Image (tube, rainbow, N blue to C red; front, side, top):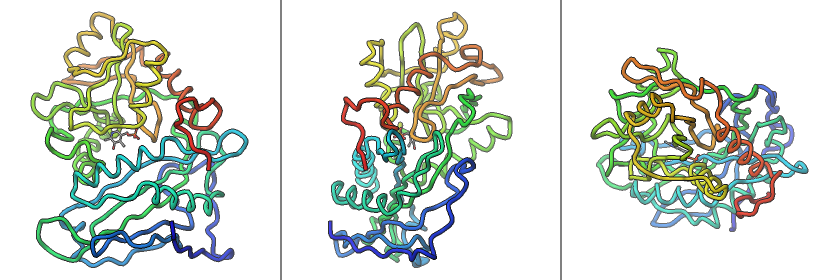
Length: 354
Ligand SMILES: *Cc1c(COP(=O)(O)O)cnc(C)c1O
């Protein structure tokens, strides 16, 4: 792709943050990728110094919320090389989100080439500290200045980079989850399967109420009966019951996670009993009571695998595996991490080297 490149001069590069204290989403690299859409077409992309946008207060995203994003990571792993995990699957999902929100789709190959060029310039921002990564955030917003609910005619697509710390610097810490039947995340026919900004705005109140009571995250139930399990926070969820690995099906209200898909494929390869089916909170309680509930874990790019130590539902606490990380959770985490950091042979064609 023919993209223009404007680099920050050497003396104006930002000092790198302490790799052992990165947290999540606090620091941003020196450059970003931008591309605008107008007159019915994407214009030439650019790599330019990271900085503010100037947008019109009537920009349609500020009023009607046409905004979508993605989240993937660059991993510094084996032989100090930089690896990407299923990056084109993220861009394909970005286009599905775009279609759902009536936003223009991007050319996956061209944008991927632009992201690779950006990463090459920003290589030094990919941390080396154990478990730390460079988070990649592609985003699109509607910028046409106009009031009226309809698809905008102008957009900015951009990619910013943020070095992030290991999710579990001291090893796994199984989380306490609050099962909400007061709030819902998404409804079938809505936009739950799109990575669109409004879904996250809508989820904040439930999360802060749960956190105020000492829980890490919320488990979402379906919007109709408030019984079927959907997701945990911003992760997909898995249960091990009677040696069967169960995850809710992609019903339209669930975000189709790439980690979810990877877990399913790996588990099937290992010969496990894997099912995508509806599972209710009552079934989980029943399994806990009869001793067949073995493990619960979340799966997503940020944490990879997040073991659930307990679920709290209607004044009842369901402790999972004695509050400890399950065997399968640990094994999946280790395997996925080994693939993502390039230590394990990439037999599935999931990993790209920068
Ligand atoms: C991004 C996201 C996930 C996880 O998707 P990955 O591709 O595995 O990172 C799950 N649920 C929600 C709501 C999400 O936004």
